[in-house]
Image (cartoon, rainbow, N blue to C red; front, side, top):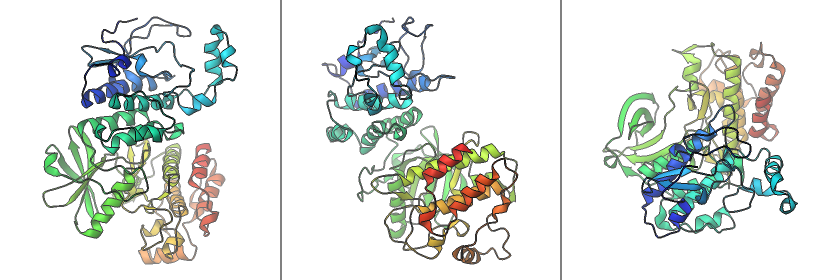
Length: 497
């Protein structure tokens, strides 16, 4: 095995060596993205030499079979080049079947009761067979979060749960963004942990000081921290990508990265409350199908800027309609993939704790495309609100509004389900909602929705499973909100289509 002259990360952080906060972030970024792996000879089930690889993100992206390290801990991470370069070790031995602070709950639950009596030559087989399915990328993410806490605090992670771990994080260790990242990596539910590529992005933003908002970890009314634009002189606004009554969205660059910047026209109290709401909710979410918020700042004119993830393929609306005309040249499987991703993103919002989050303005304009038009992401959270809030105003776009929203009744997450049904119909029918009405003014459409009318269901046709698709859409349009399906159920149905 290759020799690491700096010894293990464990010995260094719990020894007398000195390092800065930025050193700690650099190590973790290397671990997540660019750190090489110690060369080693084949051991146990591996039949070839693994040469220098490119960190956990590389391992998790290997095709056809991603590699999970399964035993991430400071003892298996090594330092070289005067402690500036971190390398992953002990990859060959694979997963460790010992319940420790780096082991996620799903592995501990699968431990064989007779593990202590298993002979040494059968241990590896027991580990793989009894834990089949739990050793995924999300297994490593859990250990990564604990190691991040450990290198920042220089304390051994002896704790009972994630809340205790975060409580032990000193205030001077960093902003609540760091706490949020650790908490998300250490979720008990592996499906709620972020992907490694997202962890890399978050760490880079924290390391470079781009993130400026206050993370909301509890149901409190925390205010975002607005930075002056002069503190980020390298923010360069480019072309206007979209404009509405409240502001414009620019394509921009910040520290070499491409971002989107929403600049609001107003700076009054009501407008700022809307911005605070947007920042507060966006800062809570972490999902591959929801646009990320990077930070907020104020320009020389006192206008608020919100810096967010850039979607290079534009909106779903622009993709569906070219110069105002229908553009029906996308394939059926792509349409279903978009809608499945949308359903998963909304289901994530509805499952948020301590209260569900409702978008209330789902429409193709607010759904953005990336990754060569293959990935859909939900945007424009300026109108989202938490469950158990009484309706005070009609927020949304006429064609996509649920009947209870039109009638100013108390709304629930089922309002999003109705809107989802309209979008699903639009993408599959390849027509604008309520195109068949002679009068398509907003008030006319709202009247039709209020009396239980909806787009023509028979326009969804010529698909292999058209009956199932029509049933799904019809269920979203049920007048009584409680009888509509959940987004989680809809996501499951679309996955099977």
